Image (cartoon, rainbow, N blue to C red; front, side):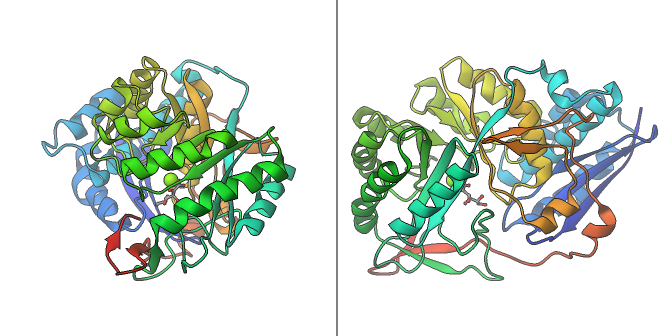
Length: 403
Ligand code: CS2
Ligand code: MG
């Protein structure tokens, strides 16, 4: 089999997505997600201008060799743009290989390790009461795990709180909007939120929380400690993680489980975190961490250190990434949980998929490949629209803070 075309499809059915479609001389094709929120066109150009010409004529079954060719061969390693592009190629090639075998992708990885994939949904509210109501709504929908985020009194806009509900969209404007932040207010408020959530929802539900990189290590330690009575499943992205050793200090002070890694793109970003057992869950995902081939390497390394997976699954990761992630999750021995922010109806229509939700679990389905397709005619009706993630500033003096 030979690759005859590699085409980039950019569309915006409710939000922007970049998809790579690889075609072969035997009529089989595969697709991969290449979406990098707020920087979509950089990856589209990387693929179109620099990667696609090198793929034509290659054997699509050589998944590993093509991965190494794009990683080592480019000389310039790592980084979100490069790794998202490699991920798109890798996902499309695994899709082709599984279709050629007539099997769902999880079979090629080693088969099912579990019956389904436990997911967590997002409960967002402008205040504690509204968040509690949303948590209860998710419980009613059958979810076993829910992430709770609430507005903080005195702050105009806070991460994770939006007017959308089941599909929260963070890239909300054609130029970056501004949020504000106060660590003091947030640290006082968050334990109160979880006290109320536990009171209302009980203990038969996993609760998660995302700090979105806003605290220093000692502040994160304090938050982790103050949340211990509410038995969180995890506290996510407590502090920025470029300096992986920062997590040593958080770890010394709290037994609240720690998750990190949605912005990581290679195994090197989490080497110390995993090796020293400074985290409990690694959030790297298919599209931003080099595809199935590289994510598998990260997961195997994590398994040696009792770190489990908890892949990123916000709305900016397309249904193509979600489909591939679910096959991965069904197989990976050290699976923890999968994030699942539902997509809009427009998005779901452009990307017909085999995965289904029931009782708080997702099931990838048994269609050959990863089970997700793209309706190119429909996609063409939704042209790219520039959209950015917000920026965040300290409320009292406007200092640019972490988002
Ligand atoms: C997030 C995302 O889902 C999460 O945990 O932190 O909302 C993230 O901010 C976006 O996916 C960024 O593109
Ligand atoms: Mg997050």
